[in-house]
Amino acid sequence: MVQDEFNRLVVVSNRLPVALKKKNDDWEVKPGSGGLVTALAPVLSRNGGIWMGWPGTAEEEDVTGPLNDFSREHGYWLHPVILSREDLHGYYYGFSNEVLWPLLHGFHNRCNFKLEYWERYQKVNSMFAGEIAKVTEPEDYIWVHDYHLMLVAKEVARNKLQRNCGFFLHIPFPGPEIFLKLPWRREILSGLLSYDLVGFQTIESLNNFVSCLEYLCFDMDYSIDGTLVKIKCGDYNTKAGNFPISIDFDEFADKASSQEVSQRTAKLNLLHPEQQIILGVDRLDYTKGLPQRFESLRQALLNYPDLRGKISLLQLVVPSREEVHEYRLLKEEIERLVGEINGQFTEPGWIPIHYLYRSLPREDLISFYMASDMALVTPLCDGMNLVCKEYCVCNYHENGVLILSEFAGAASQLYNDAILVNPNCVYEVAEAIRRAFYIHKSERQTRMQNLRKVLKEYDIHFWLDSFLQAAFYGKAKECPQAEIYRYLSKID
Ligand code: GDG
Image (cartoon, rainbow, N blue to C red; front, side):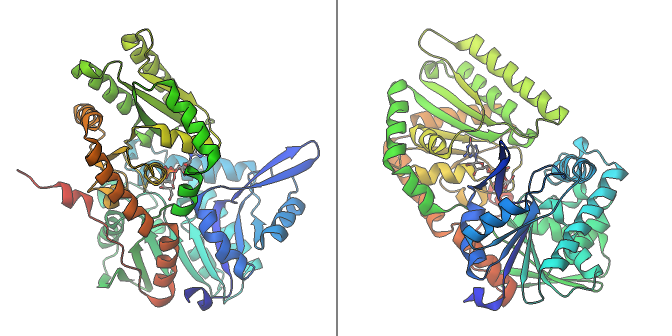
């Protein structure tokens, strides 16, 4: 078993997988509910592993006690990395969210390449490496997550620490035409090359990474070894692979069929039995293509008057990065569009867009998934997108349709049975909405059955095993994934 190959698993991410809330003078520690925690927790607790990250609290707060209580109860250790306000400003809001997030999603015009951000990013990555030095041993496996921490392995090596370190990028990696805009492109690439294994969501991101190396490292050499790429670049030797992340199929399917969720779904179904509900669920972010989605709905209602009164978009937007001016502007734009479209089309008894700006309890979210006739998942760029996977897994009645952006990583797995769209083209998305509305019951069922089959086989546990097998045996598990642009690029 691959988990016998290392002593403890040490997961390193920007945030700890818990939410801390102060109640009077006591701290309440609630476990995170994401799929990542569900998959990693059993491996972590097997040998008293560690999860390292920022606890989300102010530097002057001492949260060691409550975190230790949580650790004892759950069988793995939460190790806080304390960040000052200046650290957060430069490393998190600055370099991570104003440089790497837009750049890696292909929005280089939105980047704010401030030198002070870069300096703080290096400092905080070095702090994380310092914490690794304090609490880990050479036999541990260090698994670093996401774009906030690309330099950690390099810093670990700089400290002359022998550690086996892997990295997984949750967001896309762009091609050289975008990545080369970054003033610190060489440093970021050498940071990634310092890991023993670098994992991406899709083959495209993996190829883009290799292409960037080819541009910037003149002595770069690589070979394909089964499912992995072996890379040699100067003194760096590493492996890279594609590992599409997913969700816990059984957990979502069980919740969806629970009595509590069924009751909530039944209530929602009663509200508009004569209408088809189109569901959108997204964090507030410019990568998610929300304005374009609303324009597509407008186009559908203009082009196909037969849909008026028969479809409604139920759009949940989850607040995110509200401190950032750009995100506040996006919220205003979204709310203006919702008002405009509702003003344009609403009739007595029917409203085209139901808009919610908040986070919902997981059970409510699942009942939304179940009560919807189609999901409209149209990001302009997305590493994977778990919402579309959750929608399909919860749809065990197999009567929903998935309309999915070709720019979501998930399209590389779900391309055959989702209706794929280019989210930049409002006419195409409008036509897809009409198509989904009229799609025959039996076709809905076949498509959803196929989607759920893929998701059952390649779930979060598959992802975890595949990554660890690549790390320890040099071989990732086979997981069929299309290179989506090749698939779509048949020119007639
Ligand atoms: C990054 C990458 C990649 C949403 N609303 C509520 C709620 N959610 C949960 C969903 C889902 C998650 O948030 C969103 O995940 P996504 O994958 O769609 O998007 P990002 O947050 O941008 O995640 C992405 C992912 O990392 C994993 O690698 O797929 O590409 O950008 O799980 O269920 N949960 C609750 N209430 C809500 O209102 N409880």
